Image (cartoon, rainbow, N blue to C red; front, side, top):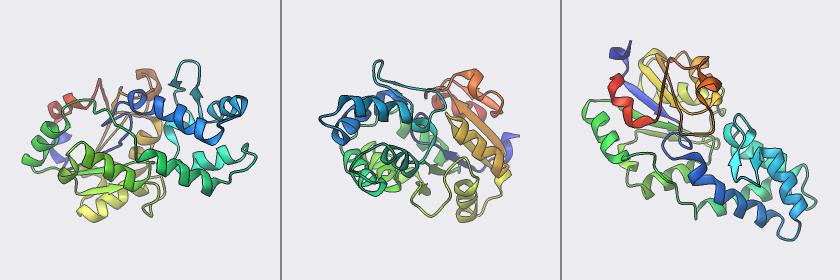
Amino acid sequence: MTANIHGILFDKDGTLFGFNDTWADWSVSFLTTLAPDDHNLRLKMADLVGFNWATKSFVTGSISVNASVDEQCVLLASVHPELDAKAIEKIAFSALQDTTAIPVCDLDTLFTGFKNNGKLLGIATNDFEQSAVNQMQGANVHHHFDFICGFDSGYTPKPEADMILGFCEQMKLKPDQVAMVGDSTHDLEAGRNAGVGLNVGVLTGPAKHEDIKHLADVILPDISTLPSLF
């Protein structure tokens, strides 16, 4: 099954970078910026997107884990007394520039191995494209990727198949020649919707094994063991 895989498309948050390690402190800072003098509003917004303010953790399958940034901004704007979705999105993008993403493993060694084996690599994230590019550059692995797209890159966000099909089109691959690697149901649903050759789940995001087992062909602790499949 894996001999036919020529391209690997990765989710970003919870897959390449530890989800909670990267986003918990950022979420506190971001929501505080949106409501600096209203703790109740901060708690309401946190509940809406599935961020547990008390434990600084994310609810499995919540909008903060699965949805695109613009979807989250629309939801936050629905309860914010002053800011609309576009204003919140602008604040989110600005705040993301100071985010330190925590890699789940030695990404450079991992991707170097894949490239040496002739694999085409891509990222499909429901984050901003530019944030993904910045994070890849910050981790010094940007040069390994043939394709990076976000919710604002012109493709319908996951769980739709569009990002994966865009990767296939640009890389001149068929979907069954691609492996989709992700930590959430949205990632793996996108893989199923696209008809990928291999759907790989990882457990470095909020989802547990039982949350994604019905969608994944294989589930790994993290992407460091991914080369064993190829």
